[in-house]
Length: 158
Image (cartoon, rainbow, N blue to C red; front, side, top):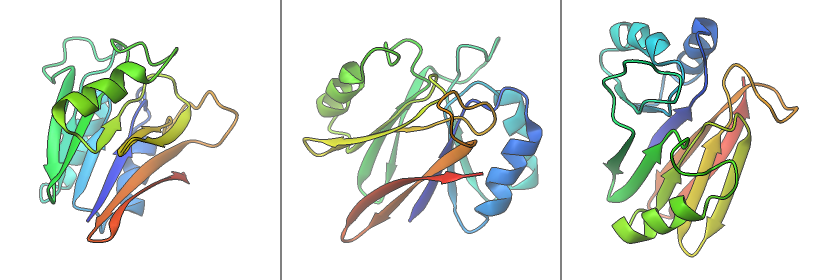
């Protein structure tokens, strides 16, 4: 199963469309906030897709939760935007939350910087920004492949 993870589009409808266009074979998309209005168009264009989201610090008046859990093929995924988790300084709180709830994957955004770490059976992933990266790299998204042989996480340039 392939899951597409992206975030921080901040009004770039083009970036959101490109993520979906390049990943039409994926059935699950997880948006980690800051550009939630862009996502409503994709929900209409791709009604057959599972599109999950959490609110970012710039998603004013959002009805989405601050954090959520999704289970895909017996793999528990914890996801949040990250602004309330101190992610600009450390991913420790996310790691311990994942361990507490027995999640194999913890997803966050907010920094606009790609990040991946695997520690003590937990994959911690930030997809970077699909529109406005702050790490000197191109805009990007991430994907998670969940297979019988394990979990693989990677970034892809847009």
